[in-house]
Length: 285
Image 1: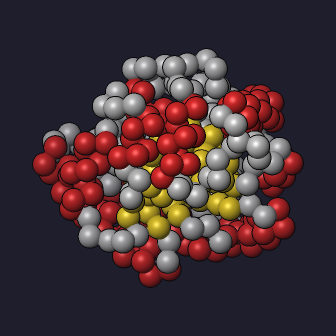
Image 2: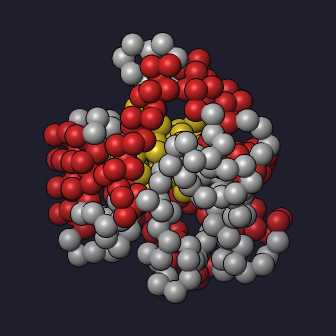
């Protein structure tokens, strides 16, 4: 493998206790976790949250694992509407999303994570491109003020089907955000969906913005995270690009639909990526 730190998103361990998932990933030689806050994993609304944060902080330290916080839980904020509300909603609804992001930032600080990752969400209210972008910027500015206070980075992920789904849209947003704590959460599979460039080219083009990088297989034009070998992703050129730019952050495997076989899928992903590294002539793979 490259010198990026290989990590795994806990949304692919939905049927495991968080502690068990972290231990399994450590035993498989993953060096980090992308910890998706959810009803079953470090729920920020649980009365035991502070105690659980200390437990997870100790476990991560004992296992020598880096961590970023992911905020893409489907029904954590509303049990009936997926990913509702967003920062684009009316003020009262958006406040619930904003409070969640504040809790995510505080959780990151509590467990020793460096970064939270988030996306725009949907334009549920149908306010349109201009007003939607204004609302998103205002919300992110408030998120960033909290993040700056505690030294946490905010990685923004363009998500296919959401208000900001492509890298060109990220560019528009980035131009309006004045914070050194703001950057890009680049999901390379999403580049195959939106098809604005090749994934390896995205790595090179956005090298100065990268806070996290996510990798999985995916078919062109179809937003479904797949195990490696089942889609159109060319992993070798991506690893070379990451090495070329000197990326040393987390390279996160995200297989959110594979929880029924989580340990097996995590092991297969590690084996696949290690073999690609060996084929590139990397002795430490």
